[in-house]
Picture 1 (tube, rainbow, N blue to C red):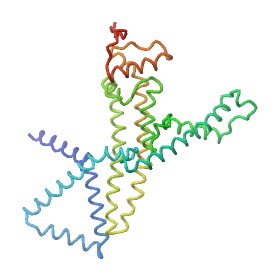
Picture 2: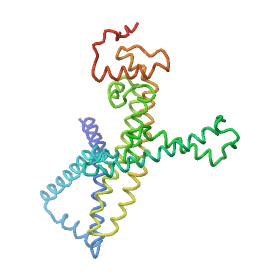
Picture 3: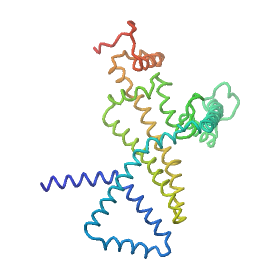
Picture 4: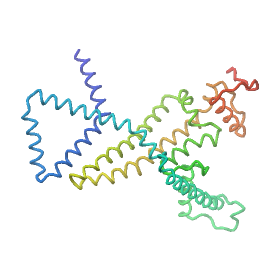
Length: 314
């Protein structure tokens, strides 16, 4: 029994660290903000703790239960808000904000078009294309600019109509669209099917990357919820750089890491997807996109075409 209770306690602690630690930190910050807003912060905290200590045992237990329920409830609420918040950060906004979103999407598309022209000019000089005959080779500064342009183009959608209003949205949209461009495979539609044939190690890496992405969203949410404490103390405004760091620094980096793994999953394991669905592998690179589009259409709506022959697997 001692071993059982020890294991149970360990699981409870592990679960609390996963779900309640952030909520505990948040409420501790709010308590600190409240104390800083008092004339005598230390005296106010001492009086509050003294009033708790003066309670009867039953009242203290009731208060403890209420605190635990509050911590668990706030943690659960934030988890439920993570996905809607991520959608907003991607640029999926309410209809009332559609004009703003459209304007920002057009700006992103125009910037990508300008970056593409600049990249083409530098690439021509880099590879010695006939169009760049007589031009000097790239300098070190121009090579650095070339690399930055290439990274920027990779993580923004190629088609202007796919552009999103935010950087996070463009990174994730580009990651989802790349398998369709290269292999004719719709990443959004086929992801659940591909997931089932991925090796366990890659699944764990993807899960960890997705967790880091969600953590960046929730970190920004918790920081944003600190701002109402400005009513007590202006020190709560320190939450503003925390929100900026979580959503403008950590989140895009987490999206890049997740997008790289998503694309690698299709690069390395799309053949397993063909085999699992009993579709013949494309014979060469030229035929791969057509084969991928056919496979995507089959998964999406099925087919009664007798010319579509399944691979026997032999």
